[in-house]
Image 1 (cartoon, rainbow, N blue to C red):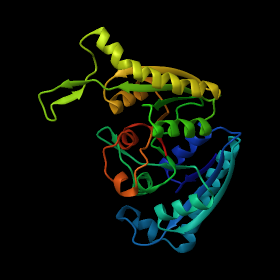
Image 2 (image 1 turned 135 degrees about the vertical axis):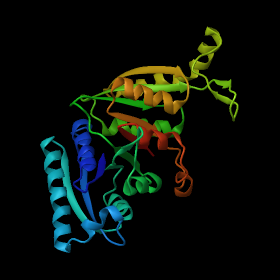
Image 3 (image 1 turned 90 degrees about the horizontal axis):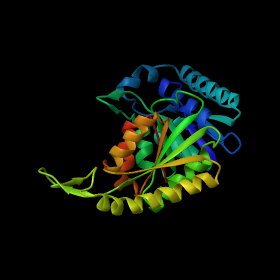
Amino acid sequence: MRVLYATDGGAAASDAGRLVGSLADRGRTEVVVASIIATGMPELRHLSAALQSDDARRKVADDAVDRAVTALRAQQLTADGVVREGRPTATLLEVAEEHEAELIVAGSGVTWFGARLLGSVSTGLLHAAPTSLLIVHAAPAGEHGRVVVGVDGSDHAVRALDVASRFLDPDRCTMTVLCAAKLLAPTLMPPYTGYATSAPSPEVEAEALAPARRHAEQAAEVLRGRGFTADVAVMLGHPVKRLLTEVDQAGAALAVVGSRGLDALERSALGSVSDQVVRYAPATLVGR
C-alpha cells in the first residue's frame, strides 16, 4: 500500500509516524513523507514560523522529513521524502495524487474536555480527501497494537476493513470487530427515542443482535483469512459510544471506521460516526 505521511516535525506528527512504524505491514507498505512549507496568510499560532527566512523554513521542513524517513526505515519500512511549498491541505492532496497514495496519515493536536481537537490541516483532510485517512492523536504504547474495527454490514464498512487489512501488520496487531445493534427505546427528551443498551426480554435482545453478530463474524473471517487474530464484540447501543468504549477498555491504539463516501460539501457537516470517532479515539483510520 502507498501511504502519504504528512509531518511538520511537531509532536503530533511524530506520534503519527510512530504509529505507522509500529503497526504498518513492513512488506507491503511504501511511505512518502511530505512536509509542506506553507504559503499564503498564516494562522496566528504559526505567525512566528512564517516570519522566519525562506532558508530557515526550508531547513525545518527538510529536517522533519529526514528524521521521519530515518525513523521509518529503522522500522524496516520503505520510505522516501518530499518537501513542497503551497497551502498545506491542497498541496498534500496534490502530492497524494501524484504518488497514487491510498492512505494519508496526519497527526493532530491537543485535547479539550475529553475531545481531541483537530488542527486546520487534519480537518481539511478529513473533509476533502478522496482517499482513506488516518488521523493520529497519540502513538501506540507498545510494539503490538490492539485495533477496534467498527462494522455495520455496509459497503463503506467493507472498504474500511479492506484498507485496514492491507495497511496493518497481522504479526503486530490484534483485531476486535465490533458491531452495535440498534434497538430504539422511548425517552422523555426530543427526539423522544434513543439507542437502548438493553432489551425488554432475552428473545428481543437475541433478535436485535442476530444481524449485528452476522456482520461482525463475516468481517472477522475476512481478517482471519488475511492472517490476523480477530475476535468479535456485539452489543446494543449507539455505534459511536459503543466503539469508543471498546477502544478505551481495550486500550486500543487504533479505531477503524468507514466513511459514507459523501461529497466534500456533505462531509463538511459534522456529526457522522467517523467524524465523532476521529475526535475521541487516540487514532482513527477512516476508510474511503
